[in-house]
Length: 110
Length: 112
Image (cartoon, rainbow over all chains, first blue to last red; front, side, top):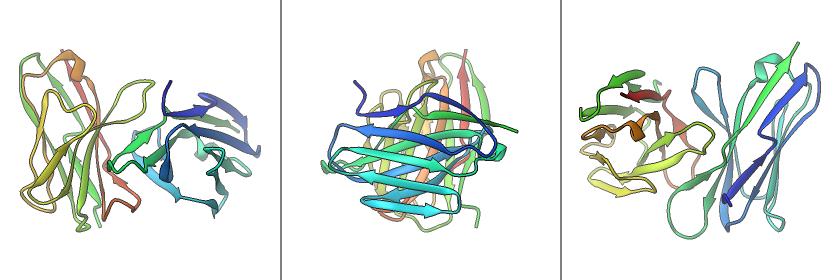
């Protein structure tokens, strides 16, 4: 079983829909990252959080440390949101590395 | 700022050839990382560096080497390329281990 699991693997939405992408992890962590990978391949950091909730524009990220679960929400989705969204956790075990999920591929249609 | 610059963007290698993937950052970040991304899999750490002159292995270091002679540069060397090294390679950097990462645009490598 992977240490970081994302669901769903693939997601199709109509423009304007509210979208939720989930991330569950099985290790102790010091931080969780949400990343966006554009169709051209570039990776952009969206959020880094260790508790609670963060918001940036139409994107909201939440984390529940007790349940080892995080969600990324996109409100009023737009075709330009189409990308792969990647969850990654920094383990608290002293090894400086991120453990990555396999990503969720989102397609938003007009 | 240029951020993290990777070259080349694409490369085709023959089995047994060698090459160096270049990575440069201009943000004075201490930490630099090399990852590979295979289809359907999460990124895997190849090597990382916490500062000039210091490097360490990640999860999948076999077949690769790195050096960090300056803060800015962190090249990844492939010796004796194998088909299993066909992948997309990303370089990333952060100021320290608790910071967010900045990624390069990636290098798509095919070994035939």
